[in-house]
Length: 320
Length: 300
Image 1 (spheres, chains in turn blue, yellow):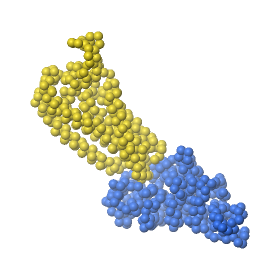
Image 2: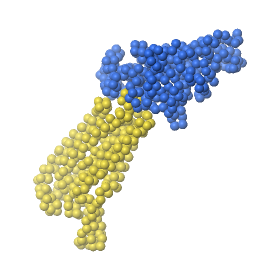
Image 3: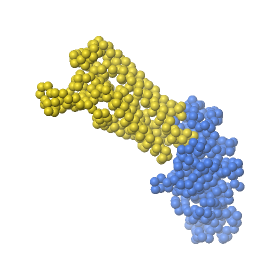
């Protein structure tokens, strides 16, 4: 079940008690995760949830206030060449120097990265029919995103991090961009971390999910396990949370009924306590939205649950 | 990184070279005719003979011909120029990266941001120092005949000759780099740095400069009435009140039948230049050091 084996070694990414404080406010607090090598990870959260903060600490652009992050077993330090070399990064809005040509951008990549793969970068441009001598500012948004992606891939880093990569792109460009990402991941075994609030986009691509809200990890794990470990119950409105089979994550009350997303061990999902209750499997988007709609800051993950926030069976610990 | 720095600053380098070429053309034109006139009027011999006291008419003619071209043009337009050069190059170095978000690209490559910044500062700062040195050399060459009459200590000569000019440019550059980092935008950083630089520049020129080296005092008996005010300060006379071309008279007053003149001797030129350039270089290093420290410390 665990995908640790696909990378042949330890996890691609591990964080322990990772947190960043800006003045008095925690941008990210107590983040503990283990992501196996080869996973395509979706990092979902509303704006200001701490996604960019988490990404920047992983790739070495920001120092944590507490805890640490490891990429393939090596601790990430801000300002460290060793950390920077291990991650290919496409920042939000894929920034490039506007008055550079594509060839200039690649020249910069070659000058600033010892592992630079010029052939790979040029082959990508040829396949996408983007001329190397074109100035960046004359390229479309989708083409600029492809140049950014080519630069991140040509770094030949084992982890690719994309921060809102398609937010500013039109639907066709989104599709093409993600197709390129997935093709690269499939052919090289790259681990990919995609931060986005376009949930539908991630559903098609990701086999791993992290939901972040209010600066905290709400839920994390392999998508299949998370879907198996949750169900949507329809119960009489009068039924309290206490009698439900599983831990309620999100509840919607209508006139007579309540729809409750509960988290429970797949092995214990067999019987419902009342014949009138109904249970159905939950979809990816429903699951994400349920966790995003929890009141901010209301979540408390006990110590035992943090240890469980790892790949493997669905987490069992109580979430109130 | 050398290539990256060159690619990002080559337009500025080309503009700098054009500026230098324009200055050189102007200098060659005016400098040549000044030399011709200087030789033609036999001013060199007169200065050697009597420090200019015996040829006031010829000096007056020469000054009438070239004084305004030399002084007004440079004093008015070149006072701000070193500051403008420094802030235009310095403010975008970090300000533009932060303004347009390209810092996320630049600093997520394998070169850590500290090294990225230090290399850029060294290369761009070095380029500016060379530009300033070249400007200074051109101005010093072209003004040479005029300086033989008025010395190097007057503002119009002192501010653009010797080693202070590159130091002025570098100080503006350093302040602008720091302002770009703190304000995160190029244009406000340019304005803030230029204001700070101008305050420093004028404060030093009018407050501190003549205290960098102790001035000398000349005492001589009064001739005529030992009262009234003393007007021959600076270069209002050739030779100056001290009788020696190149001295800069700071003040004069009468005391007990004697006339006391306070002045900077001509020989203090290089000492003053190095002291003042050192001051501006210290400001440069402090500002750049602060920028490196803030960048390392704060992140972005």
